[in-house]
Structures are given as C-alpha cells and as structure tokens.
Image 1 (tube, rainbow, N blue to C red):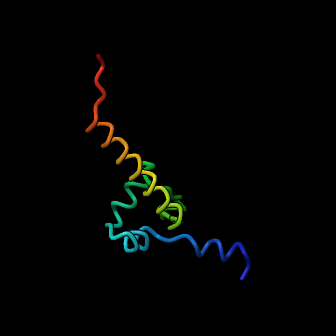
Image 2: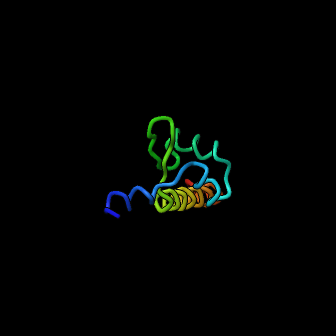
Image 3: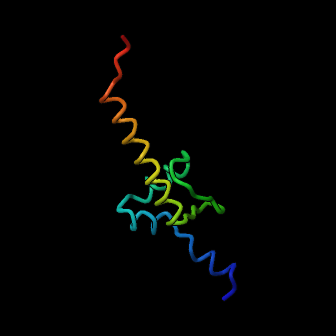
Length: 78
C-alpha cells in the first residue's frame, strides 16, 4: 500500500466520526460547515481526520473553560 493510500484511510466519514464521538452525523456535518471542526468536502461527502477533530474539540473545550472562568470571576475596576 502506498503512502498516499495509507493517508486516505486515515480520513473518516461524518457517520464514522459521529459514531466515534457519540454525535449525530448531521451535527458533525453542520459543525464542519460552520468551521467548528476541521473537515474537507469531497464532492457531496465530508471527510475528517479523527486526530484533527479531537485536537480541535480539546482546543474548543479549553477556550470554553477559560471564558467560563473569566465570566465567573469578574475583576473589580476601582
């Protein structure tokens, strides 16, 4: 198997990503369309790298926690 074929197998469909992350496939496609998770559209189908999607979700979660902490601990401007 060539390296190109090997790399292609690392990309999953929306249904496969949804199953891996316990999400609905339409939600995965909507998130990709909005740029919330990384994906690429090939024709009418979406393809995703599980590693990239997981990394982006961790990054999004960290940002959400940071925003939550900042919102719950407002600084006093005296």
